[in-house]
Amino acid sequence: MSALLFAFSAFARDHSAMNGTWTLVPAKSDFAGQPVVQTGTVTIADREGIIIVSRSFKYEGATDTFFYRDITDSEHNETIHTGKDLKSKTRWDRDVLKVTTTESGAVTLESYTLAADGTMMVSVVRPQHKPITLVFQRN
Image (cartoon, rainbow, N blue to C red):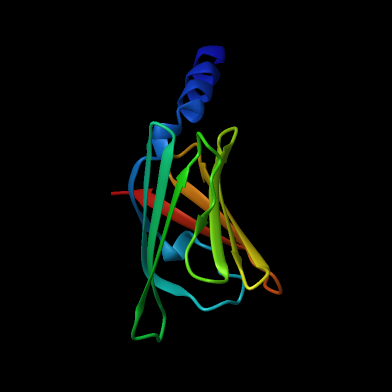
């Protein structure tokens, strides 16, 4: 049992374990009454301190696909500014990849973690909204 816990612990600390493309599993996700994401993918690349998180979502009833991309140099703890009122910061907090986006003073926090079953859980906390939990499986 302790060997299993050690193996999982070592796996969880390897930040590259989240690298790759993940597909949303809407039926396992909790949208907390917010618009349901019909389809979605998240691609994570953490290479030599540069973290790239790309997200593409299509919401139920929407005709457009929404694409977000954050790039951060975690070694230098830089923040990416995309436009006048939008800035994004990506960092590791132990085994949790956190993306903090500030737009017009409103802060959204996304927390990415690996679950024991191999799925990726994403908690999204936005101002004046209930937190949502998205579940992704690796492609």
